[in-house]
Length: 264
Image (cartoon, rainbow, N blue to C red; front, top):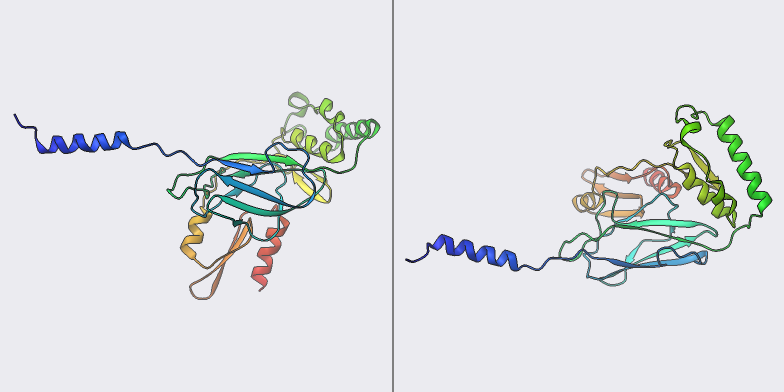
């Protein structure tokens, strides 16, 4: 008895599907390496090198830590290596991500989204803190949270929160103290709570959300894309209108770029 043609074709298709090799998501090595604590402040480079050829898109995302100040535009050195030229402050832990947070600009040439991850590194330098300074600062923090923080009762701080005094008292520098404090205060679910250090305001608690827009899709649709900073870009659209994308109000450079684009 001869097999039906349709059955033979179906069997052939199933055989082809089973034999297709799985496509592994691209993974990246980063320099400075994740977790380094001896990066020199000043002009520096961040290199993100993937283990596969990429399609030229990118999504370098923010984390809860300060984002490095990018000088100029990120650029691909070759099909696998992205270069970011940055300016780093002393005694600061910086953080950034590869994809994640609803963004997936890093893709291989075959369209496979790169594995997302978050990385951080710390710069050297900064003002040392002696034990007396640390104890004085911790005492002032306790007093401020008990007497001056308006939402103490709302967030039930007496029952749910206490300072990580052991870590704060072990901080070797002012920058490390500020970093530990920001991480500690992030346990209070209040996006209005922030600390100022080194002339910069740093939020503590951040709400995590998925972006409801794909920047890469917008850029492709509009064309004539002009990326001013990591968080601000413009494009000219039909009728001589200017489209301005501003993804955060927390980055002074991005806000200034948006204002400048509108003013021009």
